[in-house]
Image (tube, rainbow, N blue to C red; front, side, top):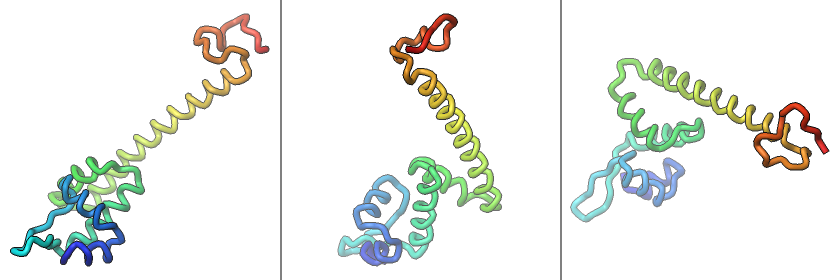
Length: 127
């Protein structure tokens, strides 16, 4: 199918599809007249790419995981393992953001919030 049809069926712009092609996420074959010809499988693959992006995967990860998934004997189990890894990363980010929030809260209204050795030290008085 040509890029216009793929754009219409996938909901992606032609520019996005060209970008994905340039970085290797989707492949096309050139017809003798120079038009890009994409396989039917490009539509569900691009749906997968968009879903994976919404779930926080980078385009590099999607490309890497796509290769792994194509060779996996059980794609559902392979996807579940990827999601478990992503959950671990999200939990770590939540912990990091929670610690950042706590530090910001401790520094708020201290009179000099950017002095690193004053916040939380004995004898430090809030102003």
